[in-house]
Length: 113
Length: 114
Image (cartoon, rainbow over the protein chains, first blue to last red):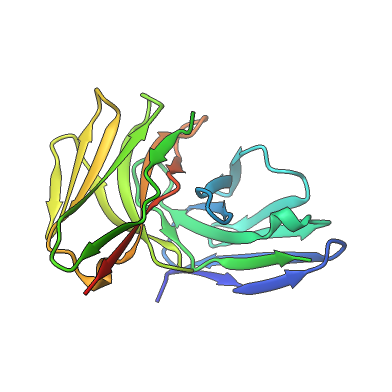
């Protein structure tokens, strides 16, 4: 059982919808990450929160809006997405600081229609 | 140029074979290095870290050559259960420091057959 839990596991949404992806980690970590994995492309880092502060926004369009209310929870708010945003969205966590192992959740499969 | 480059494969090998994957990275400031394994429609999982001195974990051996910016993974005595995509990963220190910034290769697919 993974220490990083993501919900929903699968989501289909229209381009005008607003939805959110949720991530919760039970590992006592204080850094959390959102990654995007599109078909046949490498994982792309989207956002990093360290000690509840956003420390990296990797040129992600504003239709993706992250929220980190505490060190255990991370959200990705979605609105007016495009079909090309369909992908696997992976949440991860680690201890803050460098060189620490990152653990991934099982991911949320998003389809935009 | 991609930050982390890997041969996408697939590598189709029989059980018991030895197979090697290679990876190159472009940023000499990369701090640490890993191999992750990703099964079909699953999340990536850490397979092993990679050290300059080379390291071994059972049937798996990883090597790092910082001068050539080259990482390798050797799998001996392949098992059917080794079938997966192997991701080469480099860790950059975040811009403001204090956090990991993992950069992933696109992965090399391995298929082990009976």
